[in-house]
Length: 243
Ligand code: 6PG
Image (cartoon, rainbow, N blue to C red; front, side):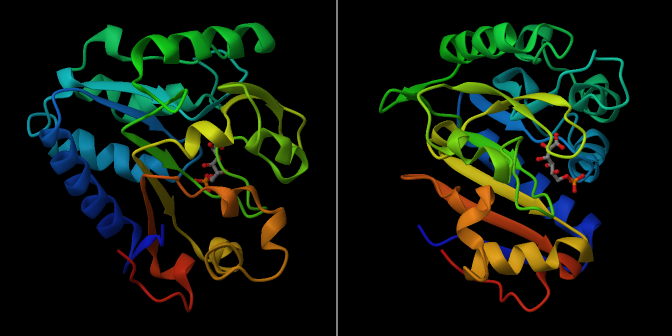
């Protein structure tokens, strides 16, 4: 499906627009499963949700997962869970049983299997794969998304729901959702900001250069919607549009 691309003057207006859309989507369903992205970009969304949506969203309907997690303890500054807890989770009334943390402190291979089981238990299935209502993703300058890096393209085509990945630079172990899970979601939303991402956004969205070698270019839900929310710096010459 052709992505819906929306471009915003700045990260604050992007976060506000996405938060509003998220509120509307959650209101439509009795129960919602969402996988959060890591990295720094989601912090703007988390702050906006914590500030403006603690009451507007019925968080009791929402089950939160993570698209990936660094294999570090939850108190580690690198932890994606820690960022979400500090900026969002402690500011909303969400039942603790609705927070499905990847245990970054656990042995990676075992945790990948355990988390896959937790996803099977709580997330709807479709075509034999978990079908998240929404998966929020970031984009690395090297074209990675979640923790699917260009040197591990096999994670785009695997039978596993979760996998152990390694950051190509630091070697840091990560647990990540795999390509088939990302592409089974009812909605996938890339949130991308900053001038440093403009080149990779062009390659992915306009199929330029070595786009086939970029994991993010292979994320396009088979049945679901694909959204790209960009700030003007990341969008460069990309034109908003799509259905
Ligand atoms: C992570 C993320 C990763 C991130 C991108 C973009 O754990 O780091 O899941 O995929 O989304 O690297 O990161 P920024 O938002 O910090 O640019």
